Amino acid sequence: MSQIGADQPYITLNDGHKMPQIGLGTFLSKEPKELEDVIVAAIMDKGYRHFDCAWVYQNEDVVGKALKVCFDKGVKREDLFITTKCIPQMFHRIEDSLKESLQKLQLDYVDLFLVHACVPCMDYKTNTISGPALHEVWATFEKLQ
Image (cartoon, rainbow, N blue to C red; front, side, top):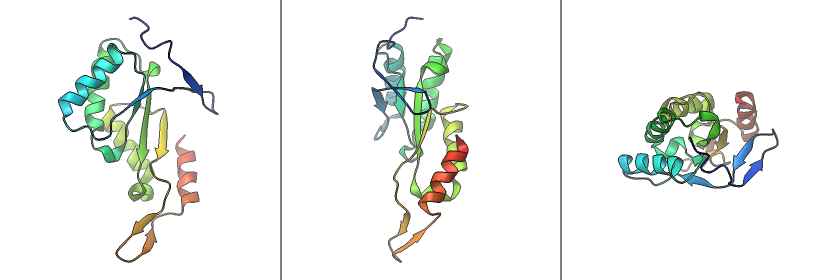
């Protein structure tokens, strides 16, 4: 397997992991087969190594299928950097959100798991905040590392 994408710029994170500076976002992808084909081509032909996903995009299963195609063609998991996110409505079950994403992505781990929006979950009908406090959300994220 050639080293397509090996020469792209990376950022070294605080924990020492390297994150490719150029990534492909999957937000607003409408056609599943088109997204799958784009991801496979991005990895195999264009050298993309960083993919930005999120539970709320509702396409992680398609991303997972595309990743599997690439793994079957010889791409190594450790050569890719996969990001996904947890939305405020899932702050009461962060670990479940991650597990659901991992299952859909067909992965054992993601490289970066983010708070999608660092705001409390707001009920606009009653003007009340629900769910855990943001410092509790952060503590849960740290435990998942």
